[in-house]
Each structure stands twice: as C-alpha cells, then as structure tokens.
Length: 306
Image (cartoon, rainbow, N blue to C red; front, side, top):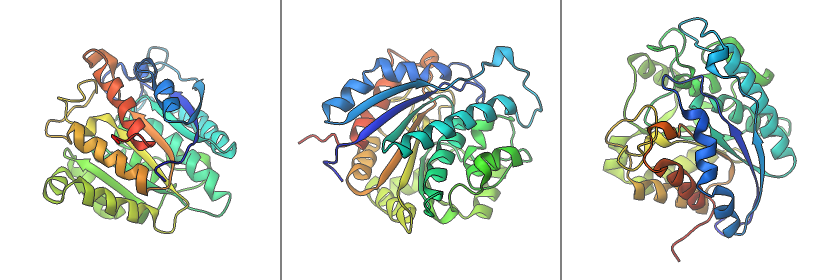
C-alpha cells in the first residue's frame, strides 16, 4: 500500500458548535494554508478540493438543551458532510475531511459506513484522541457533542444523532480502536466497558510502544471489513508539539510517535477515509498545529524518509 497513488478529495467541515472553546471553524483554513494540497500532490496523488460544507455559526443559534448543545445545527452539518463523503467515495476518491471539532466524525464516518453498507460491506475505525468521546446526554459533564461522537457512531446516545443516515451502528465495536486516551470522564469508563471498544491508553503506548499498538489496531479494525476510516484528533499529540487545540492534555504522544503511527497505517492499513479535527488557530503558535496536521497526512499517505 506504500506506493499507491490516490484520488483524494479534501472536504472542509468548519463546525465550531460541538466544543467548549471557539476557533476550530478556522481549522480547515489553517490546514489548507499549510499547503495540504501541494504537499499531497508532491507525493504523486491527484487532489481536488471540494471546499467546505455549509455550517451554521453559534452566534445565529440557540444552544438548546444543556446536555446536547447546538444539536440541530450539528445534525444538519453532519448530514451535509455524510452526503459529501458518500459522494466522494462513490466517485472513487478518498475523502480527507478537515474539521472543525470532533462532532464532524458523526457525519464523515456515517458517510464512509453508508457507502460500503450499500455494497453489503462493513468498515473499521481507528480513532486517535486524548479523550474517550463516548459520553451520552446522561453522562456528559459539559453537553458538548464533540465528546459524544464515538458513542453515537457505535449506536449509543441521542436517537437523532445515532440514526443519521438511517442506520445504526455505523461501525461495530469489535472493529473500533481508540488510541492515545489519557483523559476519560467517569461515565465514559462505564460506556467504554458497555460498548466493548478496544482502547489503548497512553500508558499502553508507553509500555508496548506505538508500533505494536498500531499494528494490533490495524488487525482489529481490518478484521472482516472493507477498509479503515482514520479519525485523528490533534489533541492526541502532546501540547508541546500541537499547541493549537481546544482541549489540550499534557503527556500526549510525541511528534515522532505520531509520524510512526501514520507511516505504519500507510504501509499496512486499507485506508478509505481520514479526518483531521480540533485544529484551533486561535490557540496556536505560528500555525504549528496546522502544519503538523499536513505533515501527518503526508505520512499517512506515503511520505517516507527514504
């Protein structure tokens, strides 16, 4: 898979509704400014930029229920994104989705899942994140939907979100792997046990090494599936290397560990789609996090030292 040249479609999803801090709606622009399209074309890929899906901004919306803040607007944005990801896959391209907060994965993964479900096939999911993202309206301490997105994709949570696209779950728990977790809410611990997702915490990465963790993740996510959707939250990387994210947690994976993970995925995983989320230029330093997002995408799509 290392030398495969792809048809890639960039899709922006500037959703700034699912998190607690403003600024991630500028994430797609920050990643584009870091020469994403050019860098991928230098690897031999064919790249087309769809632009951004239409997203409402918080200033025009009422937050709504405290346990599901901005739900109607997020649902609308995720439905639009779902349709564009399906369209991209139908056209034979690999969707590369730029967030926005991690609530956008409800739409992007639904799109990937829906495309393959129409062929009677399932997908796997590898989710890099400092957080569990498996809260529900009953367990959330904040009401922010970006902390519920993985639970929703696995069929747990608000029915309208869970049933986006008319089917649930979007991916089976046995084919879902969460990597890099180091900040989990009490209710999320119970939800993770209930769901049966494989979780590699930061301690397991420390003890086993990134190579073993990612190799096992690829086996699990790829078992009986048509391919793997990769959803990468930049806050999985230590804030020293990724300062521009709204929910930083110290003690994350290193710059080099992140690249190693992407290089292994490039070589061994049947990658069908990729998300880059939670880049917040308002909190960044000289667009370091936007540049990192581009560099990691290059590694995931074939860039090597030699």
